[in-house]
Image (cartoon, rainbow, N blue to C red):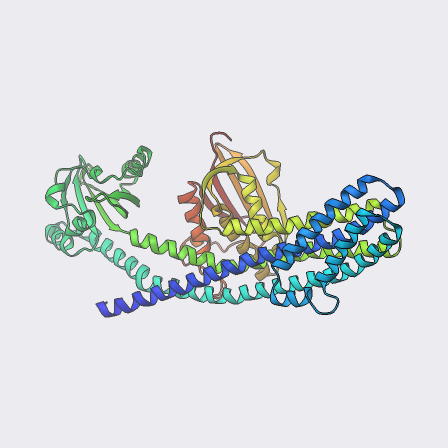
Length: 565
């Protein structure tokens, strides 16, 4: 690849990342607007409740003449006025027309209603109570109209988010294809060929010296050979380039000179155990260059033996993958962006039922009041239900924002709490597709694990979404997904099982490989389970695997328990 082509590809890559970043920040602003509308809807709903409750308290005071009604009325009207000022201060242009219309405006009626209440507090009469009741009914209808407007504006913002989702998806696919075609595939193919050449070179004794010399000179990967005491006896120019050391500075030295301090004794002990048992080790190591800079290297170490099966040398093939790791991070962010639309859909599904419940309760109160059958028990029961449901809507916004926030925190937490957070995001989607969620994790005592905030939820959501897609694709009757948890030998074992008829046996060993997918191109990138595997194995120091049952697939997630658990 010549320099001009490489430069063109680099410019295209930067443009893709830039466009996707703009889309992300735009979506983040739109998501914040959803929180804003949730607050307006919640506050307007409370205004409706306050208008009815204040009218009720004036009537009760006229009937019973108890001062506690006056005290409660003062509190309510104070909050009522404060909420109204906040609402009118944060209205959109359309909402301002509704609130400040020339004829019978909401703002005018609300302020007149507040003045009526204050007049009643100074000199309560039955006539004033009756007027307050009539005005409260007018305000109730107008506030209903305002809530409907806020809901419509919120839905319009959600639709705008969906439009952004397509842009992000296209950017993500293009970026992934770009990286795969111009970086990952050539590197993998090059490594395969070099590894094959190197193996053949070692097996052909007659040409060993000549082949080794050519390979050392031309190989892009670093190669280092040590004796059986693990002292360096030879290395190639690529190894010098990666480490920053000259060959003369490393000959006779132990490769531990390159240690970065990032790994503990157990890490290196495991490498030697694998060399002893398998005569081969492959993995990633963080080492330190001569100038002190740390870098990530992919390393394959071979044990060389003589005819008597005695160890004579160790040979390591290394390549710097620091830049590849950075690109992996970009891809992870792209995947997160592509899943935001689905998350928004989950939140929308979660809101429909609670909003319907609020409407039903408020309408029920109105009907009972109009027919004179509204007693205190029904009144407060419905109001408590409305307030509880509105609080739930606010909490779903917090859960969603916490899941998407950039700053991840490594901390000890209750495993059940993290699982329930993930289930809260996907539960409504499962319900709308008539998939039963069986959550059995609360049957186990609270288990403490050390995790990175948001990462475990991402894994659980990936697995459940895959199970949902399999169930819908195969049109399973009476579908379900079951979550179980148990404690075993210092580990928490979380299982996610479905009755989606299982994973084909020839596919099962490949599901965690990068870019492997059985879905259509518009539904899957082949990176969801791969990223889940990396999160559990690398970030959370656990294990993840899958098996088939007689009903469907079972995913196992094993996480080490904290010492305090």
